[in-house]
Amino acid sequence: MTDNNGEGRLSLPPWIKTTVLTIGSIAVTMLGLLFITFIIGRVMPIDPVLAIVGERASQSTYDAVYLELGLDKPLVVQFLYYLWDVLHLDFGTSLLNARPVSEDIARVFPATLELATLGIFIGIVLGVPLGVLAAVRKGSWIDQIARVLALVGYSMPIFWLGLMGLLIFYGILGWVGGPGRVGIFYVDVVPSVTGLILVDAAIDGNWNVFKDAFSHIILPASLLGYFSLAYISRMTRSFMLEQLSAEYVTTARVKGMSEWDVVWKHAFKNIRVQLITVIALSYANLLEGSVLTEIIFSWPGIGSYITTALLSADMNAVLGGTVVVGLIFILLNIFSDLLYKVFDPRAR
Amino acid sequence: MDKLLDIENLWVKFPTRQGVFDAVRGVSFTLGRERLGIVGESGSGKSMTGRAILRLIRPPGIVDADHISLEGVDLLKKSEKEMRAVRGQRISMVMQDPKFSLNPVMTIGNQIIEAYRLHSKTSKSAAYAKSLEMLEAVSIRDPERVMRAYPHEMSGGMGQRIMIAMMLIPNPEILIADEPTSALDVSVQRQVLDIMDKLVKERGMGLIFISHDLNLVADFCDRVLIMYAGRIVEVCRADKLHEAKHPYTQGLLNSLPRLDAPKDRLDVLKRDPVWSEAPSVSGRT
Image (cartoon, rainbow over all chains, first blue to last red; front, side):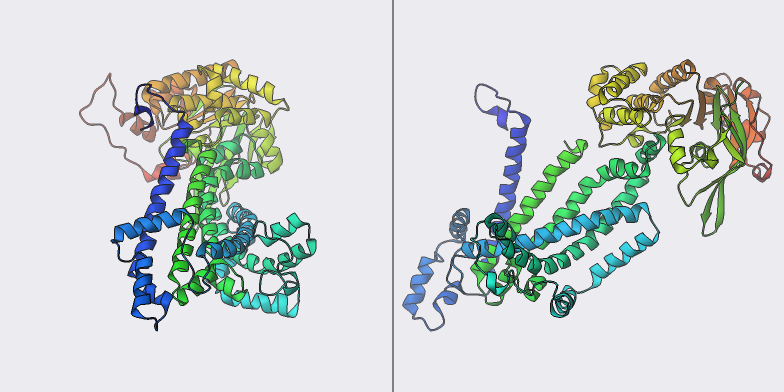
């Protein structure tokens, strides 16, 4: 499509084509997502005008707001307005606190991002080696331990583990901080640059805040990490088992390679693509906000934000949050697609 | 003829829930600087024999033998670490399908260089030069490009020649070729065989050629072991294969179409349970 315009049959370098195609596919997916959220907003049995003006407003106030929201216009026009607003990062005003939803999201999302990133980090660092080890020593005690760990991870309700964690490590042992992102003394001590308290504290050089924030985040992050570990280690194990029975692994052994190198230099290189998908999906799940974890740990993240908004019929906030979560999913997918090409020459 | 390899009473066993399955049952043979063919149908234990020599049978499989001696030294007595110095450097193996036996996410260059550097402490650039030389020896045109390429960009014939180059680069004494041409087009089979033959001869190596293709083995090898149900049923000189006496070998030969003696119907192989119970014939010289 790029080389048909005009005289000079310009053939663009392939990376430009790929970039254009990638951006195009993001745009199309985003459009679909926005369309769906828009429809959800319209079919919800909540009168947006009533939600703003309250039940005791006069008819004239009601009509004025009705017109102001553009609800008299055709649905298509309304959708275009909605698109225009979202493009300007305007998700409307929250009914609960009368502030722009985008500001709220900018405040709550970093909290989730910080928690999810640390969580997935723990999940990868422990889960991948555990899965590889379980595959290499299939049927051994380490495989059994990995199996039990994963089974518990799958089946244990997170709120129970969270409460027990708080009870033991915070209540009894006092090793970690309690609920919330930082202790009460440290609230708003460091200037917010990124919204990630650990990073902000490090930028500011305030290590007391850093330590306190870390002691608050470590327990919920470990919990989330444990749940991703359960999934990641199981998937890693089955991917590895498949690769370890491949012929090229025998080739590597025939060459006289040590088992460690056979596993990491040969077999592991071949599971990276599949592993990325698994990790990206787990990460996206965590970024969506784990509602239960956020509630138990009073974590002001996007999961609890959307839930609160939903329970109080604050549709602007719900839709805004949904769009952000959807965008994260799309971006992570694109990112993992790009990594495929880095790791697998056949995908180039 | 000096003996490179001397195997006596080799067993490969796989414990299963229904009891122990014996894939190879008491096989004995020797290998000199010759081309030794092992033929047999699927499941006759010929591939297992090849892998057992390299001690590459994975647990729960068990390799057992009175001895597997490489120039007088019993491989079964070696530790896993000592065994790694044997693999590649002294005994090497080419497998059936280069599509699967080359690592799909590594460049061909890196895979060959790795095979070389595992056994000789040379610089990367020396290993690179040596690899180019080796690729040329297996008639790869434009070896620089091939070094940068990935296995999926190669044809089957090229892949197998690359495999041969990779397995011969540490200069082993014995090459086990496990159905090296079965996955290739008939048109390139001969070419790959000729290259392998030339290199094996030049280097004075011993070759174990595992195949199910009787004609190919009769043509290509010096001596043939015919395996059935984990045992050697007959040993003969390759050029005398058509005079083979064992009913199994005869059955195999008769089930092949022949240009010089066309038949309306080919014979169906009739198996006699006595064959699998008869003791293994020794292929030792």
